[in-house]
Amino acid sequence: MAYRVQVASPAERDLNRAIDYLVNVLGAPSAAASLFDRYEEVLVLLADNPRLFGVDFNVSEAIGLQVRHCMVRGYELYYLVDDNCKAVSIIAFMHGSRDVASIIGKRV
Image 1 (cartoon, helix red, strand yellow):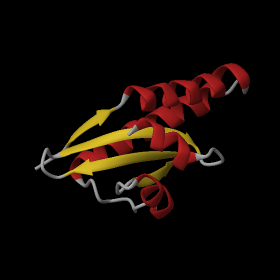
Image 2 (cartoon, one colour):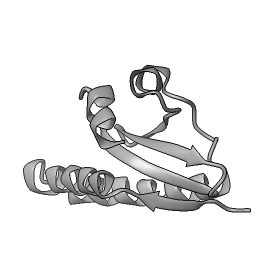
Image 3 (cartoon, one colour):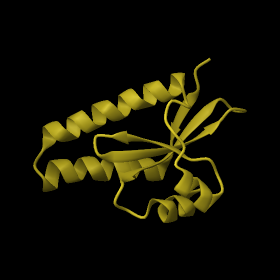
C-alpha cells in the first residue's frame, strides 16, 4: 500500500527558494526545471517505498526522531516516516552546507 506524502510548508518554501535562486540569481531556468522534476520523481518513489533512502544519523540524534534524507540535484530532502498513518512527511529541502540539524530541530 502506498504512503501518503505530505510536504510541510517550510519544506515547500525551501524548494521555492532553491528554484528562485536558480532562476533569478544564477539565470538557470533549465536547472530549476530539472531540480523540480527530480523532486517530484523522489516524492513518487517515497510514496511507494518510504525507506528507500537512508537515515541521517547526525540529524536524527540531534532532534530525537528518525530523519531520512536523499540527494536531489545537489540539495538534500529530509523526511519522516509514520507507519501508523502510512505517511511520509517532507520536513526540509536545503543545500547541505547549512546547519541542517538546527534548522530541522526548530521545525519538528
